[in-house]
Length: 512
Image (tube, rainbow, N blue to C red; front, side, top):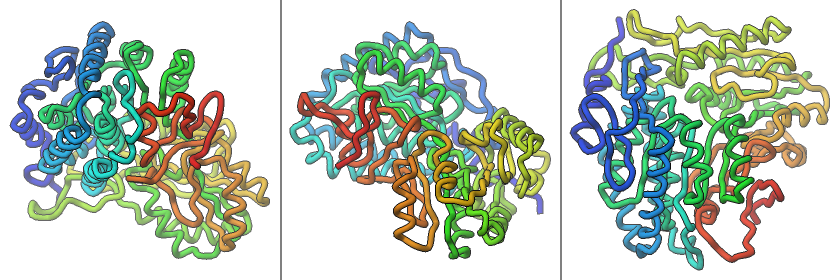
Protein backbone atom coordinates (compact mmCIF):
# COMPACT_ATOMS: atom_id res chain seq x y z
CA UNK A 1 0.00 0.00 0.00
CA UNK A 2 1.34 3.46 -0.94
CA UNK A 3 2.24 5.70 1.97
CA UNK A 4 0.62 9.09 2.63
CA UNK A 5 1.24 11.92 5.10
CA UNK A 6 -0.87 11.49 8.21
CA UNK A 7 -3.82 13.94 8.15
CA UNK A 8 -3.29 17.06 10.24
CA UNK A 9 0.51 16.88 10.16
CA UNK A 10 1.31 18.89 7.02
CA UNK A 11 3.67 21.84 7.40
CA UNK A 12 0.78 24.13 6.46
CA UNK A 13 -1.25 22.64 9.33
CA UNK A 14 1.58 23.21 11.80
CA UNK A 15 2.20 26.78 10.70
CA UNK A 16 -1.51 27.62 10.85
CA UNK A 17 -1.50 26.42 14.45
CA UNK A 18 1.50 28.67 15.17
CA UNK A 19 -0.38 31.67 13.81
CA UNK A 20 -3.29 30.85 16.11
CA UNK A 21 -1.13 30.14 19.16
CA UNK A 22 1.24 33.13 18.92
CA UNK A 23 0.07 35.69 16.34
CA UNK A 24 2.45 38.26 17.80
CA UNK A 25 5.45 36.15 16.72
CA UNK A 26 4.27 34.73 13.39
CA UNK A 27 3.12 36.44 10.22
CA UNK A 28 1.47 34.72 7.28
CA UNK A 29 4.71 34.98 5.30
CA UNK A 30 7.46 34.87 7.95
CA UNK A 31 8.48 34.62 11.58
CA UNK A 32 9.66 37.57 13.67
CA UNK A 33 12.65 38.37 15.85
CA UNK A 34 12.11 39.37 19.46
CA UNK A 35 14.18 42.03 21.17
CA UNK A 36 13.69 45.21 23.13
CA UNK A 37 10.48 43.85 24.63
CA UNK A 38 8.55 43.30 21.40
CA UNK A 39 8.28 41.08 18.35
CA UNK A 40 9.68 42.80 15.29
CA UNK A 41 9.26 42.27 11.58
CA UNK A 42 12.91 42.99 10.88
CA UNK A 43 15.70 41.09 9.19
CA UNK A 44 15.57 39.45 5.80
CA UNK A 45 13.93 35.99 5.80
CA UNK A 46 15.98 33.31 4.09
CA UNK A 47 14.06 30.82 1.91
CA UNK A 48 14.11 27.38 3.53
CA UNK A 49 12.91 23.88 2.79
CA UNK A 50 12.26 20.92 5.05
CA UNK A 51 14.83 18.12 4.92
CA UNK A 52 11.89 15.71 5.22
CA UNK A 53 10.68 16.09 1.63
CA UNK A 54 11.69 19.51 0.30
CA UNK A 55 8.51 21.28 1.45
CA UNK A 56 9.04 25.08 1.71
CA UNK A 57 9.07 26.13 5.37
CA UNK A 58 9.80 29.29 7.38
CA UNK A 59 13.39 30.48 7.20
CA UNK A 60 15.29 32.61 9.72
CA UNK A 61 14.88 36.40 9.40
CA UNK A 62 18.55 37.43 9.37
CA UNK A 63 19.43 40.62 11.22
CA UNK A 64 22.31 42.88 10.23
CA UNK A 65 25.08 43.44 12.77
CA UNK A 66 23.89 46.91 13.79
CA UNK A 67 20.44 45.77 14.86
CA UNK A 68 21.93 42.84 16.76
CA UNK A 69 24.04 45.30 18.75
CA UNK A 70 20.93 47.27 19.63
CA UNK A 71 19.19 44.07 20.68
CA UNK A 72 22.03 43.18 23.05
CA UNK A 73 21.94 46.62 24.66
CA UNK A 74 18.19 46.27 25.14
CA UNK A 75 18.71 42.84 26.69
CA UNK A 76 21.13 44.37 29.20
CA UNK A 77 18.44 46.81 30.31
CA UNK A 78 16.02 43.94 30.81
CA UNK A 79 18.70 41.94 32.61
CA UNK A 80 19.27 44.73 35.11
CA UNK A 81 15.57 44.69 35.96
CA UNK A 82 15.18 40.92 36.07
CA UNK A 83 18.20 40.22 38.28
CA UNK A 84 16.36 41.96 41.14
CA UNK A 85 13.15 39.98 40.64
CA UNK A 86 12.48 37.82 43.73
CA UNK A 87 13.20 34.13 43.26
CA UNK A 88 9.61 33.17 44.04
CA UNK A 89 8.36 35.34 41.20
CA UNK A 90 10.99 33.98 38.81
CA UNK A 91 9.89 30.44 39.64
CA UNK A 92 6.23 31.30 39.19
CA UNK A 93 6.79 32.89 35.79
CA UNK A 94 8.98 30.05 34.55
CA UNK A 95 6.42 27.56 35.84
CA UNK A 96 3.67 29.32 33.88
CA UNK A 97 5.84 29.19 30.75
CA UNK A 98 6.39 25.45 31.27
CA UNK A 99 2.63 24.95 31.55
CA UNK A 100 2.22 26.74 28.22
CA UNK A 101 4.94 24.62 26.62
CA UNK A 102 3.18 21.51 27.91
CA UNK A 103 -0.11 22.68 26.40
CA UNK A 104 1.56 23.09 23.00
CA UNK A 105 3.85 20.05 23.31
CA UNK A 106 2.55 18.25 20.22
CA UNK A 107 2.80 21.36 18.04
CA UNK A 108 6.38 22.02 19.15
CA UNK A 109 7.20 18.39 18.36
CA UNK A 110 5.59 18.56 14.91
CA UNK A 111 7.64 21.67 14.13
CA UNK A 112 10.80 19.74 15.02
CA UNK A 113 9.80 16.95 12.64
CA UNK A 114 9.45 19.35 9.72
CA UNK A 115 12.34 21.68 10.55
CA UNK A 116 15.10 19.25 11.51
CA UNK A 117 13.73 15.87 10.46
CA UNK A 118 13.34 14.18 13.84
CA UNK A 119 11.03 11.16 13.94
CA UNK A 120 8.00 11.70 16.18
CA UNK A 121 9.38 9.63 19.08
CA UNK A 122 12.59 11.67 19.23
CA UNK A 123 10.86 15.01 18.62
CA UNK A 124 8.49 14.53 21.54
CA UNK A 125 11.39 13.34 23.70
CA UNK A 126 13.26 16.58 22.92
CA UNK A 127 10.30 18.70 24.03
CA UNK A 128 9.55 16.57 27.09
CA UNK A 129 13.17 16.62 28.27
CA UNK A 130 13.18 20.41 28.12
CA UNK A 131 9.97 20.74 30.12
CA UNK A 132 10.73 18.04 32.69
CA UNK A 133 14.33 19.18 33.09
CA UNK A 134 13.44 22.79 33.81
CA UNK A 135 10.70 21.72 36.25
CA UNK A 136 13.40 19.87 38.20
CA UNK A 137 15.56 23.00 38.26
CA UNK A 138 12.57 25.08 39.41
CA UNK A 139 12.21 22.74 42.39
CA UNK A 140 15.95 22.78 43.18
CA UNK A 141 16.94 26.36 42.28
CA UNK A 142 16.70 27.70 45.84
CA UNK A 143 19.66 25.74 47.17
CA UNK A 144 21.60 26.27 43.95
CA UNK A 145 21.53 30.08 44.08
CA UNK A 146 22.02 30.40 47.84
CA UNK A 147 24.91 32.80 48.38
CA UNK A 148 25.19 33.49 44.64
CA UNK A 149 24.13 36.35 42.38
CA UNK A 150 23.15 36.78 38.72
CA UNK A 151 25.83 37.81 36.25
CA UNK A 152 26.50 41.41 35.32
CA UNK A 153 24.95 40.95 31.89
CA UNK A 154 22.72 38.58 29.91
CA UNK A 155 23.75 35.10 28.76
CA UNK A 156 24.30 34.73 25.01
CA UNK A 157 23.31 31.32 23.62
CA UNK A 158 24.59 30.06 20.27
CA UNK A 159 23.64 26.43 19.65
CA UNK A 160 23.49 23.95 16.80
CA UNK A 161 20.19 22.92 15.26
CA UNK A 162 19.85 19.36 16.56
CA UNK A 163 18.32 19.95 20.02
CA UNK A 164 16.41 23.26 20.01
CA UNK A 165 14.33 22.39 23.06
CA UNK A 166 16.23 20.03 25.38
CA UNK A 167 19.53 21.90 24.99
CA UNK A 168 18.88 25.49 23.90
CA UNK A 169 15.46 26.32 25.37
CA UNK A 170 16.28 24.31 28.48
CA UNK A 171 19.47 26.31 29.04
CA UNK A 172 17.71 29.65 28.53
CA UNK A 173 14.97 28.88 31.06
CA UNK A 174 17.51 27.77 33.69
CA UNK A 175 19.51 30.96 33.05
CA UNK A 176 16.33 32.97 33.62
CA UNK A 177 15.57 31.04 36.82
CA UNK A 178 19.05 31.97 38.05
CA UNK A 179 18.27 35.68 37.56
CA UNK A 180 19.69 36.42 34.11
CA UNK A 181 18.21 37.64 30.88
CA UNK A 182 18.84 35.17 28.06
CA UNK A 183 19.60 35.81 24.40
CA UNK A 184 19.46 33.08 21.75
CA UNK A 185 20.60 33.02 18.17
CA UNK A 186 18.35 30.74 16.13
CA UNK A 187 20.32 28.01 14.35
CA UNK A 188 20.53 28.92 10.67
CA UNK A 189 20.02 25.31 9.52
CA UNK A 190 16.70 24.66 11.27
CA UNK A 191 14.43 25.04 14.28
CA UNK A 192 13.44 28.70 13.93
CA UNK A 193 9.66 28.16 14.13
CA UNK A 194 9.91 25.80 17.11
CA UNK A 195 12.13 28.24 19.02
CA UNK A 196 9.97 31.19 18.05
CA UNK A 197 6.85 29.52 19.44
CA UNK A 198 8.64 28.40 22.61
CA UNK A 199 10.05 31.87 23.23
CA UNK A 200 6.70 33.50 22.51
CA UNK A 201 5.09 31.37 25.22
CA UNK A 202 7.84 32.38 27.65
CA UNK A 203 7.72 36.08 26.76
CA UNK A 204 3.97 36.11 27.47
CA UNK A 205 4.77 35.14 31.05
CA UNK A 206 7.19 38.05 31.40
CA UNK A 207 10.44 36.16 30.90
CA UNK A 208 13.42 38.25 29.69
CA UNK A 209 14.08 36.35 26.46
CA UNK A 210 15.64 37.72 23.29
CA UNK A 211 15.50 35.70 20.06
CA UNK A 212 17.58 36.74 17.06
CA UNK A 213 18.38 35.29 13.68
CA UNK A 214 21.48 36.08 11.71
CA UNK A 215 24.66 34.80 10.15
CA UNK A 216 27.40 34.03 12.63
CA UNK A 217 29.83 36.44 10.99
CA UNK A 218 27.29 39.27 11.36
CA UNK A 219 26.21 38.56 14.94
CA UNK A 220 29.53 37.50 16.47
CA UNK A 221 30.53 41.02 17.48
CA UNK A 222 27.24 41.45 19.35
CA UNK A 223 26.65 37.98 20.78
CA UNK A 224 30.25 37.06 21.67
CA UNK A 225 32.38 40.18 21.95
CA UNK A 226 29.94 42.82 23.20
CA UNK A 227 30.86 44.09 26.68
CA UNK A 228 27.20 43.82 27.74
CA UNK A 229 27.32 40.00 27.50
CA UNK A 230 27.84 38.28 30.85
CA UNK A 231 28.44 34.75 29.54
CA UNK A 232 28.68 32.99 26.19
CA UNK A 233 27.13 29.52 25.90
CA UNK A 234 28.01 27.73 22.66
CA UNK A 235 27.15 24.30 21.27
CA UNK A 236 28.56 23.38 17.89
CA UNK A 237 31.53 22.25 15.84
CA UNK A 238 35.22 22.72 16.56
CA UNK A 239 35.94 25.17 13.75
CA UNK A 240 33.36 27.74 14.86
CA UNK A 241 33.99 26.93 18.50
CA UNK A 242 37.67 27.69 18.11
CA UNK A 243 36.87 31.25 16.96
CA UNK A 244 34.46 31.71 19.87
CA UNK A 245 37.03 30.30 22.30
CA UNK A 246 39.70 32.71 21.08
CA UNK A 247 37.34 35.66 21.44
CA UNK A 248 36.20 34.87 24.98
CA UNK A 249 39.76 34.11 26.07
CA UNK A 250 40.91 37.51 24.82
CA UNK A 251 38.07 39.21 26.68
CA UNK A 252 38.25 37.13 29.87
CA UNK A 253 34.53 36.46 29.48
CA UNK A 254 32.58 33.73 31.26
CA UNK A 255 31.95 30.87 28.81
CA UNK A 256 30.57 27.37 28.25
CA UNK A 257 31.70 25.97 24.88
CA UNK A 258 30.55 22.45 24.02
CA UNK A 259 32.26 21.19 20.87
CA UNK A 260 32.38 17.97 18.94
CA UNK A 261 34.69 15.03 19.54
CA UNK A 262 35.02 11.54 18.10
CA UNK A 263 33.19 9.47 20.71
CA UNK A 264 34.47 5.88 20.64
CA UNK A 265 33.18 2.52 21.80
CA UNK A 266 36.02 0.16 22.71
CA UNK A 267 35.55 -3.63 22.66
CA UNK A 268 38.21 -5.58 24.54
CA UNK A 269 38.08 -9.12 26.03
CA UNK A 270 34.30 -9.03 25.66
CA UNK A 271 31.74 -11.83 25.22
CA UNK A 272 28.16 -10.51 25.73
CA UNK A 273 27.40 -10.12 22.03
CA UNK A 274 23.62 -10.33 22.25
CA UNK A 275 23.52 -7.31 24.52
CA UNK A 276 25.90 -5.40 22.25
CA UNK A 277 23.64 -6.00 19.24
CA UNK A 278 20.79 -4.15 20.96
CA UNK A 279 23.07 -1.34 22.03
CA UNK A 280 24.47 -0.84 18.53
CA UNK A 281 20.96 -0.49 17.05
CA UNK A 282 20.21 2.35 19.49
CA UNK A 283 23.37 4.24 18.52
CA UNK A 284 21.68 5.05 15.19
CA UNK A 285 18.94 7.16 16.81
CA UNK A 286 18.51 10.44 14.91
CA UNK A 287 21.12 9.28 12.36
CA UNK A 288 23.88 9.93 14.92
CA UNK A 289 23.26 13.69 14.54
CA UNK A 290 24.03 14.44 18.16
CA UNK A 291 27.09 15.33 20.19
CA UNK A 292 26.99 12.10 22.20
CA UNK A 293 26.70 9.74 19.21
CA UNK A 294 29.11 6.80 18.85
CA UNK A 295 30.46 6.74 15.26
CA UNK A 296 33.70 4.82 16.01
CA UNK A 297 34.12 1.25 17.28
CA UNK A 298 37.62 0.21 18.34
CA UNK A 299 37.70 -3.59 18.40
CA UNK A 300 40.23 -6.18 19.53
CA UNK A 301 41.33 -7.93 16.34
CA UNK A 302 40.91 -11.43 17.77
CA UNK A 303 37.25 -10.65 18.51
CA UNK A 304 36.41 -9.09 15.15
CA UNK A 305 34.53 -12.08 13.74
CA UNK A 306 32.24 -12.23 16.77
CA UNK A 307 31.87 -8.45 16.85
CA UNK A 308 30.83 -8.44 13.19
CA UNK A 309 28.27 -11.19 13.84
CA UNK A 310 26.72 -8.91 16.49
CA UNK A 311 27.10 -5.67 14.54
CA UNK A 312 25.66 -6.54 11.13
CA UNK A 313 22.23 -7.71 12.39
CA UNK A 314 21.94 -4.46 14.38
CA UNK A 315 22.69 -2.13 11.47
CA UNK A 316 20.47 -4.23 9.22
CA UNK A 317 17.49 -3.61 11.51
CA UNK A 318 17.76 0.19 11.37
CA UNK A 319 14.58 1.83 10.01
CA UNK A 320 14.54 5.24 8.36
CA UNK A 321 12.27 7.29 6.13
CA UNK A 322 9.62 10.03 6.07
CA UNK A 323 8.70 10.63 9.74
CA UNK A 324 5.04 11.42 8.97
CA UNK A 325 4.28 8.76 6.33
CA UNK A 326 1.60 6.18 7.18
CA UNK A 327 -0.20 3.44 5.26
CA UNK A 328 -3.63 4.32 6.63
CA UNK A 329 -4.78 7.74 7.93
CA UNK A 330 -5.71 6.17 11.25
CA UNK A 331 -2.28 4.59 11.80
CA UNK A 332 0.08 5.98 14.44
CA UNK A 333 3.18 7.75 13.19
CA UNK A 334 5.95 5.29 12.27
CA UNK A 335 8.58 4.04 14.71
CA UNK A 336 11.79 5.07 12.98
CA UNK A 337 15.40 5.24 14.09
CA UNK A 338 15.91 8.34 11.97
CA UNK A 339 14.54 10.50 9.19
CA UNK A 340 16.62 12.76 6.93
CA UNK A 341 19.92 14.45 7.65
CA UNK A 342 19.65 18.18 8.26
CA UNK A 343 19.89 18.98 4.53
CA UNK A 344 20.87 17.55 1.16
CA UNK A 345 24.27 19.26 1.30
CA UNK A 346 25.14 17.21 4.38
CA UNK A 347 24.02 14.00 2.67
CA UNK A 348 26.24 14.79 -0.31
CA UNK A 349 29.18 15.64 1.95
CA UNK A 350 28.89 12.29 3.71
CA UNK A 351 28.59 10.43 0.42
CA UNK A 352 31.75 12.11 -0.84
CA UNK A 353 33.62 11.30 2.38
CA UNK A 354 32.57 7.67 2.22
CA UNK A 355 33.59 7.34 -1.42
CA UNK A 356 36.94 8.98 -0.73
CA UNK A 357 37.64 6.79 2.31
CA UNK A 358 36.92 3.63 0.33
CA UNK A 359 38.97 4.75 -2.66
CA UNK A 360 41.97 5.23 -0.35
CA UNK A 361 41.81 1.82 1.27
CA UNK A 362 38.85 1.77 3.68
CA UNK A 363 36.86 -1.47 3.51
CA UNK A 364 33.07 -1.15 3.13
CA UNK A 365 31.55 -3.66 5.56
CA UNK A 366 27.98 -2.45 5.22
CA UNK A 367 26.42 -0.08 2.72
CA UNK A 368 22.69 0.52 2.94
CA UNK A 369 20.51 2.00 0.23
CA UNK A 370 18.14 4.95 0.46
CA UNK A 371 15.73 2.81 -1.56
CA UNK A 372 15.29 0.73 1.59
CA UNK A 373 13.60 3.59 3.45
CA UNK A 374 9.88 4.31 3.96
CA UNK A 375 8.92 7.08 1.56
CA UNK A 376 5.98 8.66 -0.18
CA UNK A 377 5.58 7.97 -3.91
CA UNK A 378 7.86 10.31 -5.84
CA UNK A 379 9.16 11.98 -2.68
CA UNK A 380 12.32 14.11 -2.67
CA UNK A 381 14.85 11.96 -0.78
CA UNK A 382 17.97 14.07 -1.39
CA UNK A 383 18.55 14.70 2.34
CA UNK A 384 18.42 11.02 3.30
CA UNK A 385 21.45 8.81 3.85
CA UNK A 386 21.43 5.08 4.55
CA UNK A 387 23.80 3.57 7.13
CA UNK A 388 27.37 2.86 6.05
CA UNK A 389 30.16 1.05 7.91
CA UNK A 390 33.83 1.30 6.95
CA UNK A 391 36.64 -0.82 8.34
CA UNK A 392 39.98 0.95 8.69
CA UNK A 393 39.30 4.48 7.41
CA UNK A 394 42.56 5.87 5.98
CA UNK A 395 44.38 8.53 8.07
CA UNK A 396 43.84 11.06 5.26
CA UNK A 397 40.05 10.77 5.56
CA UNK A 398 37.97 13.07 7.78
CA UNK A 399 36.20 9.89 8.90
CA UNK A 400 39.44 8.80 10.57
CA UNK A 401 39.66 11.67 13.05
CA UNK A 402 36.41 13.67 13.07
CA UNK A 403 32.76 13.11 13.93
CA UNK A 404 30.73 12.50 10.73
CA UNK A 405 27.42 13.71 12.24
CA UNK A 406 25.51 11.15 10.21
CA UNK A 407 24.85 7.37 10.08
CA UNK A 408 28.40 6.43 9.17
CA UNK A 409 30.33 4.09 11.46
CA UNK A 410 34.02 3.39 11.28
CA UNK A 411 35.76 0.39 12.83
CA UNK A 412 39.42 0.26 13.82
CA UNK A 413 41.09 -3.03 14.79
CA UNK A 414 43.76 -3.15 17.48
CA UNK A 415 45.98 -5.79 19.05
CA UNK A 416 47.15 -4.21 22.30
CA UNK A 417 45.70 -2.08 25.05
CA UNK A 418 48.03 0.75 24.06
CA UNK A 419 46.65 0.66 20.50
CA UNK A 420 43.09 0.59 21.87
CA UNK A 421 43.66 3.73 23.91
CA UNK A 422 45.48 5.54 21.11
CA UNK A 423 42.61 4.84 18.71
CA UNK A 424 39.98 5.93 21.25
CA UNK A 425 41.85 9.18 21.86
CA UNK A 426 42.34 10.01 18.17
CA UNK A 427 40.40 13.29 18.24
CA UNK A 428 42.16 14.97 21.18
CA UNK A 429 39.24 14.74 23.56
CA UNK A 430 35.63 13.62 23.49
CA UNK A 431 32.39 14.09 25.37
CA UNK A 432 31.56 10.41 25.97
CA UNK A 433 33.08 6.97 25.43
CA UNK A 434 32.34 3.36 26.37
CA UNK A 435 34.45 0.31 27.17
CA UNK A 436 32.85 -3.13 26.74
CA UNK A 437 35.01 -5.60 28.65
CA UNK A 438 33.99 -8.64 30.72
CA UNK A 439 36.44 -7.87 33.52
CA UNK A 440 35.33 -4.77 35.40
CA UNK A 441 38.78 -4.09 36.85
CA UNK A 442 40.31 -4.02 33.38
CA UNK A 443 37.43 -1.92 32.06
CA UNK A 444 37.88 0.69 34.80
CA UNK A 445 41.62 0.82 34.24
CA UNK A 446 41.19 1.40 30.51
CA UNK A 447 38.41 3.92 31.09
CA UNK A 448 40.75 5.99 33.22
CA UNK A 449 43.03 6.47 30.21
CA UNK A 450 40.31 7.56 27.77
CA UNK A 451 40.13 11.33 27.22
CA UNK A 452 36.36 11.67 27.53
CA UNK A 453 34.28 13.40 30.19
CA UNK A 454 32.03 10.39 30.68
CA UNK A 455 33.12 6.80 30.08
CA UNK A 456 30.54 4.03 30.31
CA UNK A 457 31.41 0.50 31.39
CA UNK A 458 29.45 -1.64 28.96
CA UNK A 459 26.83 1.09 28.62
CA UNK A 460 26.50 4.15 26.37
CA UNK A 461 26.70 7.55 28.02
CA UNK A 462 24.60 10.60 27.19
CA UNK A 463 24.39 14.27 27.92
CA UNK A 464 22.17 13.53 30.89
CA UNK A 465 19.38 15.37 32.65
CA UNK A 466 18.75 17.08 35.96
CA UNK A 467 21.71 16.63 38.32
CA UNK A 468 23.90 14.62 35.94
CA UNK A 469 27.07 16.54 35.10
CA UNK A 470 28.30 17.13 31.58
CA UNK A 471 31.47 18.39 29.95
CA UNK A 472 34.28 17.36 27.67
CA UNK A 473 38.00 16.75 27.63
CA UNK A 474 40.70 18.15 25.36
CA UNK A 475 39.44 20.13 22.38
CA UNK A 476 35.85 18.92 22.83
CA UNK A 477 35.08 21.49 25.54
CA UNK A 478 36.21 24.92 26.70
CA UNK A 479 34.96 26.67 29.81
CA UNK A 480 32.73 25.68 32.70
CA UNK A 481 31.21 22.22 32.98
CA UNK A 482 27.43 22.06 33.31
CA UNK A 483 24.62 19.83 34.56
CA UNK A 484 22.81 20.09 37.88
CA UNK A 485 24.27 22.67 40.22
CA UNK A 486 27.17 23.32 37.84
CA UNK A 487 24.83 24.74 35.18
CA UNK A 488 23.59 27.32 37.67
CA UNK A 489 27.12 28.04 38.93
CA UNK A 490 28.22 28.70 35.35
CA UNK A 491 25.71 31.57 35.02
CA UNK A 492 25.93 33.08 38.50
CA UNK A 493 28.60 34.82 40.57
CA UNK A 494 30.00 33.28 43.73
CA UNK A 495 33.06 34.11 45.82
CA UNK A 496 35.65 36.35 44.19
CA UNK A 497 38.28 33.59 44.20
CA UNK A 498 35.97 30.87 42.93
CA UNK A 499 37.43 28.42 40.39
CA UNK A 500 34.51 26.67 38.65
CA UNK A 501 35.00 23.08 37.49
CA UNK A 502 35.73 23.10 33.78
CA UNK A 503 38.27 22.86 31.00
CA UNK A 504 39.80 26.33 30.81
CA UNK A 505 42.82 27.76 29.02
CA UNK A 506 44.73 27.99 32.29
CA UNK A 507 43.48 24.93 34.14
CA UNK A 508 41.26 21.85 34.04
CA UNK A 509 39.30 21.10 37.21
CA UNK A 510 37.07 18.04 37.54
CA UNK A 511 33.97 18.29 39.76
CA UNK A 512 34.83 17.37 43.32
